Image 1 (cartoon, rainbow, N blue to C red):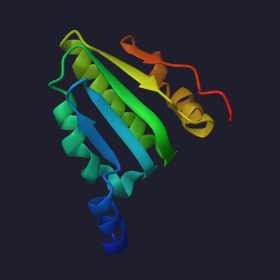
Image 2: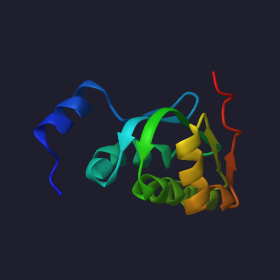
Image 3: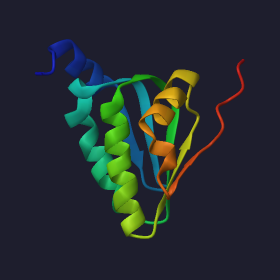
Image 4: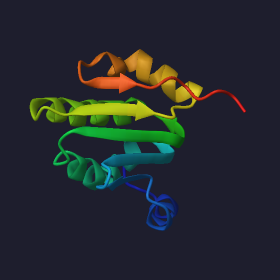
Length: 119
């Protein structure tokens, strides 16, 4: 499915999935679905070279479909092959349910931090 101009412009202003190296953190924000899959790949590819523990900050992620969880599982698998781990933190309740349904938290090197307390 082609990316609409409006969604592209939104991405250009605000990266939905970004990666920072020190410390290694993947930040996911907004709405993530199959239509934004190609836009998240550069950040996820950079995380593959991190080694150690990569944190995935989900505080600002409002919606996600299983394609994001599959991509994160791929990163977790590659990190495990290199001796690394993935820590998922800050998932809102609907995102935590998706993680549990997909089973991302059951991978051997993935830790799901408890959901934040409601405000």
